[in-house]
Image 1 (cartoon, one colour):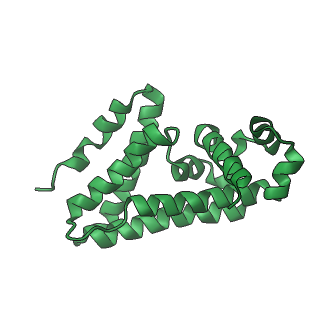
Image 2: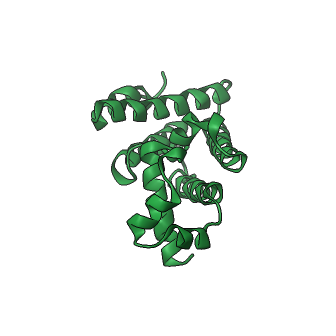
Length: 175
């Protein structure tokens, strides 16, 4: 990927993490990058296409962060997911891109909606498979809801400790 396209994606992703899909325009991104909106269109013909590419990149990065490790147990998997979400608070602007876009999924272009839905589907299936047990799928849904909700609380409180409080139960092995 060319440096300019990557820079544009980085700028748009930061805006989407703050204000969602409708929180940026090609004009905004171009101005921040020092180019015209027409130049942004040269790299990404449509906003939906750009956002879908950003979501694809996010999915790949996230999958790498939570990739299976030799000898892992269910608690290791949950801890890896929690760490990946917590890292969003510090490294990428606070909100999980999937969660931010998921909150506005009813108003997203179909291409982007499908990418967001696939992100959650992949996470739920991966978690359920790796944590195992009779109720693994329901637990996977609960874990994802708790992690996304913890990020929302941290944003509202402007304090990462809110995420830690909201997700503390995930750190304790089930008894």
